[in-house]
Image (tube, rainbow, N blue to C red; front, side, top):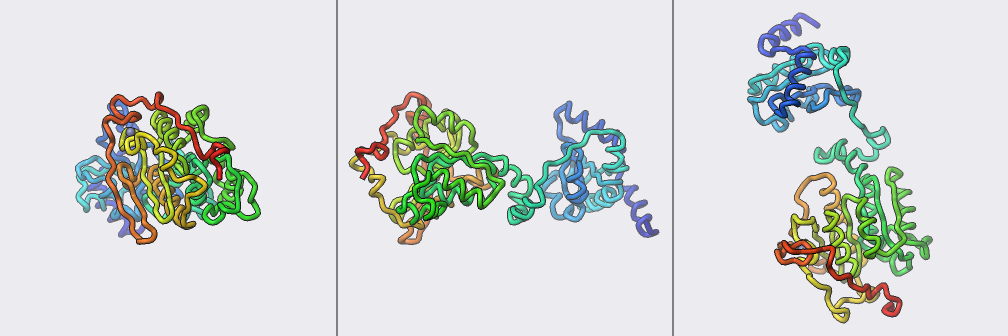
Length: 396
Ligand SMILES: [Zn+2]
């Protein structure tokens, strides 16, 4: 340390008092016991130092970002802030800066994290991404709303896709690319040539294979971080509760009414959010059914339409790109829920008119008399509807 640095340190010590690691530990332990939040602990070291271990409960604001980030992280300038670095010098400089920024009660921990560790005090090692993952998800890491912690959250997340068809295909590809760690795919159908106009996760070579298995192959080739669990079954009342129990978010890519009702009622019982999407010709719509926070499917449609009014599953035409648009918006809503960011489309129906080129939004309201989620609703007692599309006689 040169003369000038020594002088700055001397001046800093006059303004920023010091606590030893033991004093700091005592104060933090007391605070935890009394369930207070008087003291904010801030680690001002670099990321690589933090990754080697940190004091539990500390905020991490590297010295170089202090001026930029600290006011957002600690808006109340009367709070007691204890700063630490590796040895006690950088935290002292940081303390001086915070004093200049108007923080009233700033303390620097003498001896830093090195002394803390030497004294045998507790520390944690953060879970971090592997070098491959840092590179794969680098564009996520550059977004503060995602960052490394958000990416780890995505890798720990489990999303169930009902169907690997028009909506499920793009949703599965993008969720896999984004690093959602576990994707469940339930689909009993096999890939047909007529699917390839929109179901981009399948290939010509895989015509005749189960869609769920075909999707698993595509995802495996795209991102080895993702574990795919396939269910070669049709969702029905005997399996729906068991299957959805393991997931955080459900992406509804079904094309038939009975499954939507079945899923709605089971999701309410299990308290799982459903990202709903549907498409027809040039029009698509999506919304998020978050149990008891917004309306459910039965709030909007208490009963399915009579079969003669419902467009037949085999006959309904659609512009191939349209389910891509809606399926991708479903994956956006899924990521928002998993990360806990933004305003999910709860109580809002977004519609897309591809021919006119317009998105619009419709407010949706919970029906207090809803047979499923209303005050006297009983999602477990509601009727199960027959799937006209699944019945061989109704197939075209
Ligand atoms: Zn409802």
